[in-house]
Length: 374
Ligand code: SF4
Image (cartoon, rainbow, N blue to C red; front, side):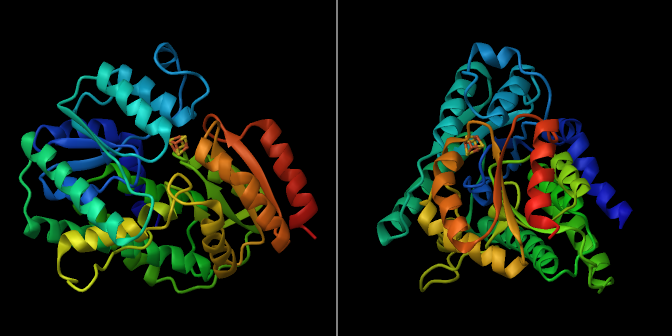
């Protein structure tokens, strides 16, 4: 198992060099948010790769972006200004939060790439939203074709097949975790999901298939490893944070993160009536994917979170938010009150860099002392 995990770690730790080498043969397109329809980018002949913020000091980015935006976006800008992403042919961004959208504009003015494109996403799930999705998808296809891409419905069917298989395998791993049948640590499972944002989907699928085969050969029920928790929050791009939680005595049994469950669940969409139309299936998936607070109201998200809590057996919730992450912070008072009514303990942590601070560890120890060791 350690060797299989190592293959995912190599992608997380060495992706810039790998991307540079890949870009000599196939153009790469960057994106921030998982509402970006990567299937269309892939079907047009590009490799979609997610921008990770990583850790490290922020200096140059302060001259272009205020300090009260999420550290993820600031660090991503810093890396871009250092030339990290000069191998990208373009950037495509689904309009989710204002920061992601605003920063895409700052990138466009300061980081020279072949093209930039923002998709204005609908908020509703009615027939008009479906039609709107179809029109923004065709705009994106035109943009990709204007920059060397070649799109066809056959190619989209193939791309959907790959991504649906990838997402299905990840959903299967998560289901095993809910049932206590997964012997991977939260850090390892998180690293596996994270590698999927930077590896080409075909390569990632092979790695996942090999891993799932190994996992299937280990049908064991895991012994309880600590206080079972659900992590709900924005983007987390550093496995160290999860390792720190586990070291404190938490057992992460479920997550609602945009570098976790929200990125791959549900694995596929269906499409009304014409189930074989790939554009319909694609539209359906983005209409019905597990929602982010930038796209859906807290009161509509809460039942989904409670389902996760019940299904996974979580005994508490850690809100793990990027500092200044407005969509999540705006939802927090509503979700925290709703969890209070359910008698579910929760705690809010705002993260700025990798791992946890001493003060956060102390607060978590107190949280465990009160709720987790009774
Ligand atoms: S949703 Fe939050 S973490 Fe994600 S880009 Fe927006 S402000 Fe940053």
